[in-house]
Length: 184
Image (tube, rainbow, N blue to C red; front, side, top):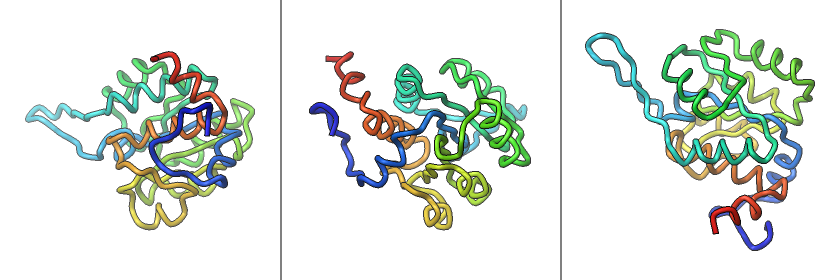
């Protein structure tokens, strides 16, 4: 596929064609960048687990010229911390209307829907997924979300799904092999 470095999962030409022009990848957080579980201690402090390989995939994707953002209905200091750590500049938390946040962001960046990917896991993500040029569902997403996705990741949310998407986009855009060569 890309100079001898191939993805560890099968992907169709149609999916690669959708990914080739992506300039912005947006993720939901709970159930996509995490496994969806929320841990809350006796003081009300919330904890989430993020996958380090997903994080590295996001950094590689950004290094190869693709912007990354999150649109999430919840508000969390943990998300603030994790997105800052990953250099994600486009962060919309507490979004009651995810479509409005999506439309505002792509307008600010001067992008068309065909240049935007959105990854979701639950029905609240469908309104944005239906507007994005490349709609992705994580493996353990709600069945309706999977039905309307252009691609379903091999892995579950918080378990490598974001990394798979990042590598798919880099493959489609021809940067995956060079990125992997950095480590050889």
